[in-house]
Length: 479
Ligand code: GDG
Image 1 (cartoon, helix red, strand yellow):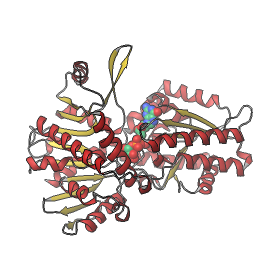
Image 2 (cartoon, protein in one colour):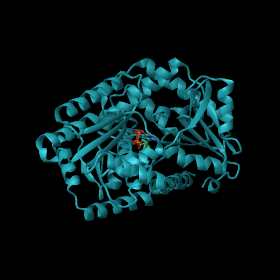
Image 3 (cartoon, helix red, strand yellow):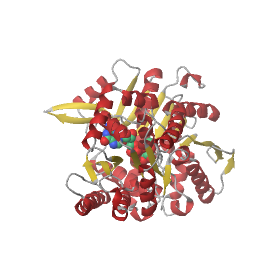
Image 4 (tube, protein in one colour):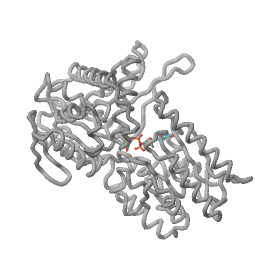
């Protein structure tokens, strides 16, 4: 833990992420704050509670006394607090929607043709990253440990370093890192890599990401020296040493499994199964994002039903897509593409009493999500590329009775960990995915159990607590 690190006990943890883990909404004229859920929050919030510190991020809204009061109330009675940043509409549009989500996001997911390389985006990205760094400098001390999260904040360390050369600054990248022949398209490739070398520590999801980052550093900053092997590599640059470590993110396995085993979730799952009597339920749950391979998945499902009519009235696909990044044109196009496909598949194949695809465009509650996982005989997790993909791990955690089949894209970061229990597919291969569905529908219970036991064992032994411990162990190595 943090107290084991040199400088303790006065050292506190400073988490920096694009958003603080609270979202604000007006309900009947009153401002309400809802805590965010998800892996990162459940990993980091307990640490902050225990050791004290601060979580710095954009509030996602404009400043007001009511917002300040809500922020205070959210951490009342604890030794940590939220430090909000307030971004203008232009900053949000150019730093977040622009550079983060129209440049880095597609490029790092190997979709360079989706990139919009506008120089003004880069200006704003640097400016807003500097704003985050100033907030860090303002509310922390040099001995604190700063842990920056994700691709929106690659350049934060650079501005901190200028003032505090000896600070301990770490980074975790939640998305993949691309290989040199894709990364080289970025007009600011050298600046981005130099910015990364201002961190003492970089955590990545998979060995492939580590290999790619090291290859990019070698190619574009040839003056660096490399040391170390296996899942941790050391890079020596003019600034100092940066440790690059593989540490796949995970879930709070026990928490999810215990909610999934609860009476409320079990009876809701039974209800969902009753609503599709006798049918095999396949489930897709994704943010509406072009990296998640949703149209490709729908076409594979259609191929199964078209080519093998014996599966009609045997299977239904429940597809939940959660609205995401709705101001970006690519996402709006994807939204209509998905809706057209769903309606054309249903139009072509539905029969009285049977709907091939049950489609929802909204988010569902945590309990409903777990009930859906539990009710589903098959999870279809087929991203074209994904940093990790927590849905795959959550599906297995929810299957407390060791049944169910996970069909997983070989391009998800979770694939190396889950390959021995899942059916791995190439999401671009329509016939391959259709065949995997057939295999899953026909899989004997005994084999399902054998595979699911493996999956659950793997996820349990490398859960979110393990991830957090790896981080602190690595920090010690940095020291
Ligand atoms: C990024 C990387 C990496 C989804 N729908 C609902 C809902 N969810 C929750 C899931 C899961 C999370 O959202 C989605 O996480 P993923 O990992 O699948 O994907 P990204 O959002 O793209 O996350 C990814 C991750 O960061 C962590 O490092 O794995 O590769 O892209 O936890 O449960 N939750 C609720 N209702 C929904 O409708 N309550």
